[in-house]
Image 1 (cartoon, rainbow, N blue to C red):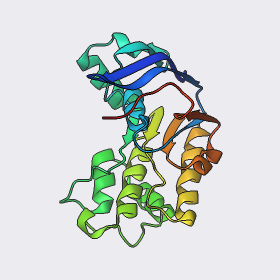
Image 2 (image 1 turned 60 degrees about the vertical axis):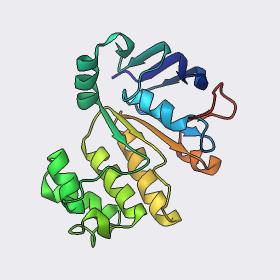
Image 3 (image 1 turned 90 degrees about the vertical axis):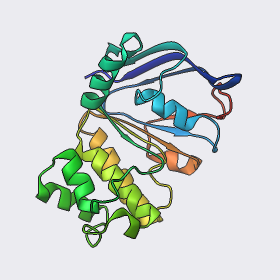
Image 4 (image 1 turned 30 degrees about the horizontal axis):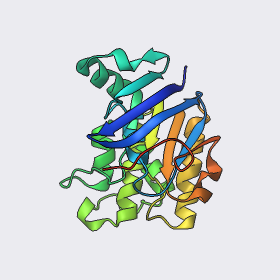
Length: 213
C-alpha cells in the first residue's frame, strides 16, 4: 500500500496565499504531525489531503493514485473508500447518541464500538446525545468514528485539543496503533510538543505558506 506524495502544493483564496510550494512524502505505516499556530494553513492542508479541498497547483498522489487528475465523482468515491477525516469541530448528528453516532454511521459491530468507546473513556457517555457531551468528549467520539472506518488513510485536525494529558495519551496511542497496521496517519497541532508522537513533522512556520482566510 502506497502512502501520500505531495509536491509543490499551492492554494490561495483570492489574493491570500494559504499554502505555497509545500512538498511532503508520507509512507504507509507512518505518522505525520503538521504543526503551527492558528491561521498558518494547517486545516487547509489537511482538507487537501482528505480531498475535501483541491490545490490550485502541484502534484498529489494518494495510495499511488494521481488524485489531482480525477473528476468530482471519482474524488468522492476515492475519498469514501480510502480516507477517514476527523474535523477540528466534530460533526455529530444531534439526534443520535454518542454510541449511535459511531455505530450507525460506520456500521461497526456493537462490541467493537463499545470497546473503543471505553478505551477513549466514553463508557459512561454512550447514551448521551452531543448536547450532553463536553467539547473534548465530542472530539473523542469523532476520532473513534474515524478510526473504526478502517480506511487506508486517517487524517485528524487537532485531535488533542480540549483533552487532558491522560486522555491525549490514550488517543495518540490508538492513532499510533492504527499506523502500525500499515495505515497512514496525519494529525495537526498548535503545540510543538505534541509532534513527539509522529515519525515525521511538517512545521508550517518553516515551510512556505501564507495566511488562512
